[in-house]
Length: 154
Ligand SMILES: [Zn+2]
Image 1 (cartoon, rainbow, N blue to C red):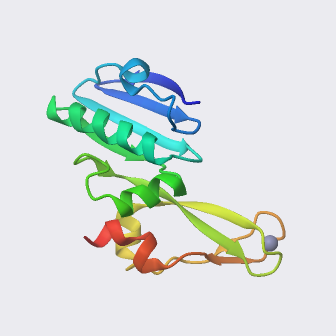
Image 2 (cartoon, rainbow, N blue to C red):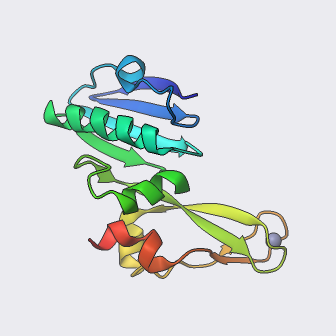
């Protein structure tokens, strides 16, 4: 079940998506017609299935066709996977920031860190370790850089 919070900030409509994107999703009803600029926050989207992906692409491509400039921010790992798998997933929109999975080398906790796409490119995809929030140990990037960051270099 997907929930949407919208907030207008100047010329930009900030849209926060919360929840899984599945069969029941109706983007047209939830989001309506987006204005000239929209920023989509995907931090709280833990899951998107194949039906959800189709609905997503259909909605955002139609939105782009109407001239809306799209920016996707704080993309969850589930969303990043789709961005990597499907080249037109963002419908020409900018991916500003993404969550990156980490795993603590000491206590094995899984955590995520938020990075700007621009900064990841500057780091040449070599993600620095994070401090584990549970034990303070070192947490290392927990995926395959060539796969998780594929969208940054295509
Ligand atoms: Zn730890």
